[in-house]
Image (cartoon, rainbow, N blue to C red; front, side):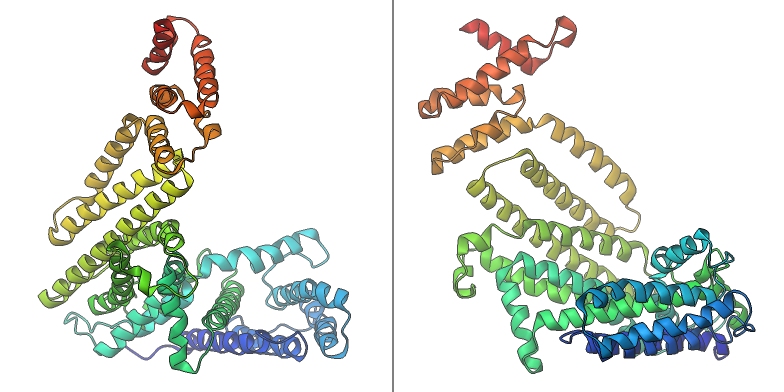
Length: 510
């Protein structure tokens, strides 16, 4: 493969410059009031903009028409940026946070001729809004694709020998894992106080930096980097239907090889999966201590065990869904290779399934504790059912990991239909009434208003409740009377229903 063409190197350098722009920008803004930082930020952005568009779109045209108007906008933009250095009027400082970016967007669209509409027409400003706020979002994966194409092993003709070393592929795996892993760590930390305390203590190894500050800086730098690059990419490929496809065609024309962003190299994929598994093993160890009742001594100061145990189930379910997506990607998005690489892939995916099952068990038990404290509702029962469904899906996926010809699509569709039918037949309202009755017997607490919103499916359980707990009257009697009135007003024989019939028969028995 020949060296990248100048324009290809320029795109990669544009990504590197955008990263530098993001890193410097977060340093300018976090912990600092707006002042000289605004002027420096604007100057850096224009340096990046001029570097990106120069040459690729043929430079700038003569001062005529739209381009002349665009150049003239430099004056108000510069004056507004300098105003942050000279003045401190809060009203205008706040307004300029909107006006200044709007002028910059209008000017860059004019200078790059990204809109064919005259600047004094409403349609032009519609184009500016689309190009500045909407279109860049569709290119958020492009910088990652550039990095992938640069780091991914290239194949040499028919022999298929990788030129890049193992370290390069491992680095790519770590890079791809970093963004989603940050999201997962935040979710796990918000789900578990012990894990949060562990994460908070980690910065002590790096000079005592605050985790919140560090994450804030990384997040802001990432957002600025991604937006700046994708906005510039939008301007560069404004006339094409898909800039990324155009880029791939140009790479193919230069090198004779069409880059593949569909399947990952096995070593890269295993590195990515093991990055997640490393975090999950630590989290799973904490969950085992919690499940076996040993977490009391591990809790941070001031944290009550009861509060710790019944929180975080929602975050764990979200992480489980993320892991399911990773699992599917690992099953279908990794290139086949040698026996050792294939074994490593299967072991990594199996470990991912095991850790996810631990999370689901923890989430299930946390939700049960939460229900015992705050009551049973339809939403909470359905979440229980969904977690069981996810667990079965993971077990089926584990089978697929080790049996290549096992059809996941058939299994998933069949399980989904079966799970939906089962949830229709488990009589959710009756379970809610029965479990709330058990909670009342154990803790003396019950929400009769919620029970009154249940359907006639709950009638037998509420009737039994009225007989066993006279202290709940007249609340239970009122609920039963309301259900009876509703049953009588359903109509004639075409509306016959078994649950409603039980209510009517109960009235006749009296």
